[in-house]
Amino acid sequence: MATRIPALLLLLLPALAAAQGQPQPPQPPPAAKKPPKLDPASLCGRAESILADPAGFEPSARPAYLSERYFRELAGRISERDVRECPQLCLEEVFGLVKEAAAYSRRAEPLPELERLFREMEKRGRIPGLHSEELIDRYVALRMFEKAAALAARRPPQRPLRVPALVLPAPVLAKGGARVLSFSVDGKTLTLENVSLAGVRFVLVARPNCEFTRAALKTVAADARLRKAFDGRLLLLLPPDEELFLEESARWNRARPDTPLHHVYRAADWPQVDEWASSFLYVLSDGKLVLKLDGWAPGRDVAKLKKMLAPLGL
Image (cartoon, rainbow, N blue to C red; front, side):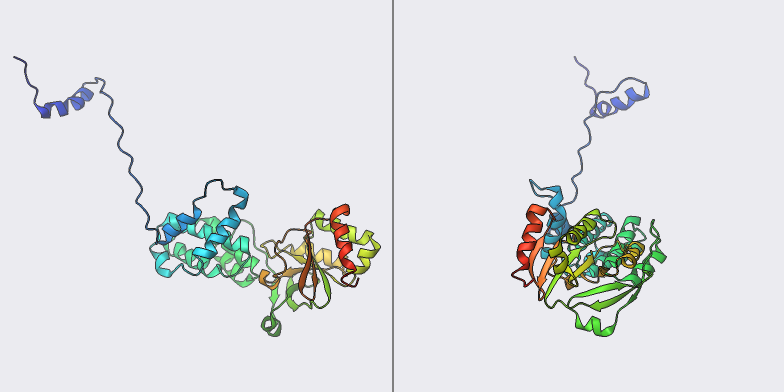
């Protein structure tokens, strides 16, 4: 008669075999734990929905896509409670999303939510160093130099922060409209000024170290008709970014007093400019956009520009 082995002993056999150095039968791997399902209405759930790339997504279009989704679905809807209840990893992802939308759009509206998310990470004592620098960049791009300097003093960035003094006359702030920041001779002070857009103005997006900017200006200087049309009507605008080019712009302005560089105070002051790429030209007539050039090819762009001069009375 066959001997029956108790069930308990069967369970103990692998352990006994291991203790005696005998090989054990392979054990099935433990079942992977499924991550908890996010509440679609929570901040994490809403952010995950935006950050999930759709099928066929082009990486180059990601900033525009994230910015559009943020302003449509999240902007102005991130509450203090949302932030408090957000797990750390999700908090960092939401910060990255809001920062991406702020940088791409160059708008000031996302800043309060960016600050709210940063304060919560600071309260928890868990701030990735990159996030400190990203918030400093947003302050600089929005010309909030005092806030940038205060945060840099508290959390020094890898690259030392150099910001100019800022003079903001109350009448200019109150008037709004087209405004620029003009450099002092030494480049250490920026002063807010109103710009008249009456008549024809040629607005060129420029950088002092950009070969495309220099090439565009050489094209104008080499053509008698363009030179006459642009005389007294050309405005060089640095993009409203975190790069200030203080010393380079000051040198440029000392060498070229007739075509000085100006900083943009707020991108919203210039709704006619939809792309802040170097050497892009915007031709305005009494403040209204009549022509946008994204290049300076002689047979195409320059010909198109010269064709526009006669209707503008130039």
